[in-house]
Image (tube, rainbow, N blue to C red; front, top):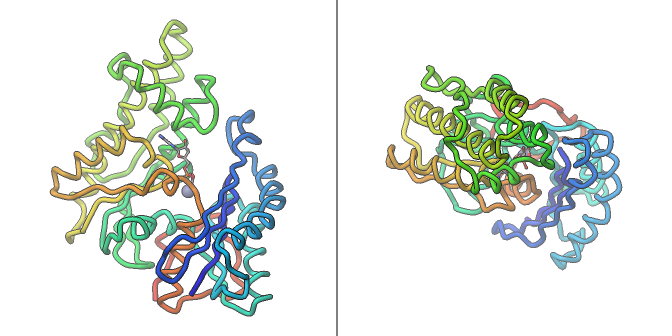
Length: 336
Ligand code: KG4
Ligand code: ZN
């Protein structure tokens, strides 16, 4: 039951090979960041073209790293959405072609399910758990009840958290992706220098909103040219942290049944200040907080391979006619 997975939903071309025990035999990632940097965000056409160019050599390298032959595979998986459709089509078509030529099953994996289950690969966390999925495209609380059984508790009504980091970085003339750069700058700044708004703070439910915060940062940048970038970064990050802590308390209170853990996933989970603050909130509810290691928080193919392995072990595979989906909410998934 050795499995190859391909991830091409955004600006990373990634492959991974897992053995039946869930051990990662190969984990490769080609980042296109430098191709998109100057545009302040990912350009879909450029991304699709780069995936097309890089995918085949990466797959070849994966077999070499894992020291296996394509015929040793039991299945081939690819992320089939949600994401930038050009890239998704490149990855899914490649995986389907390989699976068909080897006469083995193909699995169409949801990118969000990959993020949602990574913690079971790294920390063996049991269902059910509360998940905060915070990335460049998503910001949502999900009650992860079982494989394929996800209840959406709340989500952003405008920008995703990572998107807010990226947009604020762009306004400040900082490179893409903004999250790591702002986190590093914030370490040197005063988080109380600016009193930025905390949208939806203490409101019912656990939805997020970041667009008002982003606008407030823009005003400070325009009206206070003397403001120190590190103070803006620290104050902005502090506002995000306080919003996330408040929303997490609400999400935890909304759960009707106990959970085993609080899991933070997606690129924003790589932020140490956010992770630490959210761990403290979890402790208030006698829960431990978990986040995957840095290289598995951001997009990668090991998370896709793991989700595929969980599905494959339950006998779930997909038809070659499965069509890639630019939009594909977790709540539309099914388990066994
Ligand atoms: O999960 P991911 O790699 O891709 C998506 O599926 O979106 O997340 C990327 C997002 C970007 O918006 C990036 O700025 C953000 O995660 N991010 C961070 C940090 N590292 C990455 N945000 C805050 N702090 C970080 N250290
Ligand atoms: Zn992602």
